[in-house]
Image (cartoon, rainbow, N blue to C red):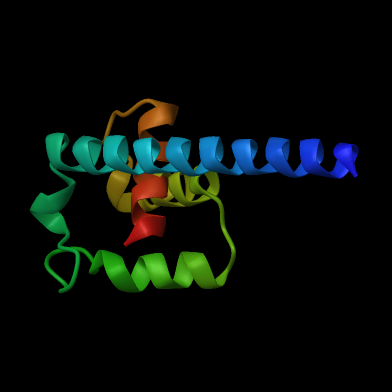
Length: 100
């Protein structure tokens, strides 16, 4: 019984840490998107020059993609070839998109 309680407590701790880390990554991703002009071509809800972000996020969530995969897909799209961001920035932008 004691073993189960310790295991449950450890699992709860890990889950709370990973949830906090994702929230921080999403906040950093939103800040990176704003700072690097992403919202010049995109809005969250409506098509601008580029597609609206919420429908993209819904598709990425439906496909079960993780933040790093979403960031890589966005980075690889032809329109973003001249955008110079770190891999961490792209991953954080992916985390932000997944939270929309």
